[in-house]
Image (cartoon, rainbow, N blue to C red):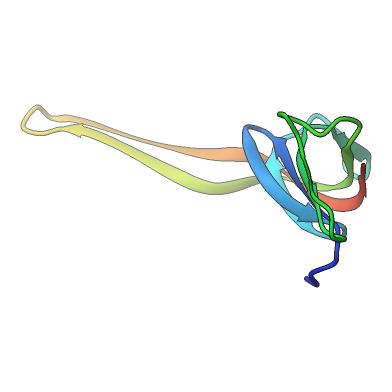
Length: 108
């Protein structure tokens, strides 16, 4: 990535992501159809082009637009609980629902 390109820090699903135009990111599942346009309006910072805007906590009027590429499930996380000497064993697994986004624009 070049130094002068515009980037933003957005918050979605309880996590923060540093994105610039054209990036592909995987976030927690969003309620949107594949191929549809999504607007992420919780923008914490906009930087690049020699100027930086820092939100308190969000930048006013800023938004990031993205296209939903696909919905998928993440890697399996295995959970194993046991208590020593008590014959207690529990083995479960979990796969998180995720959405793959392609960033199309940074406004603000």
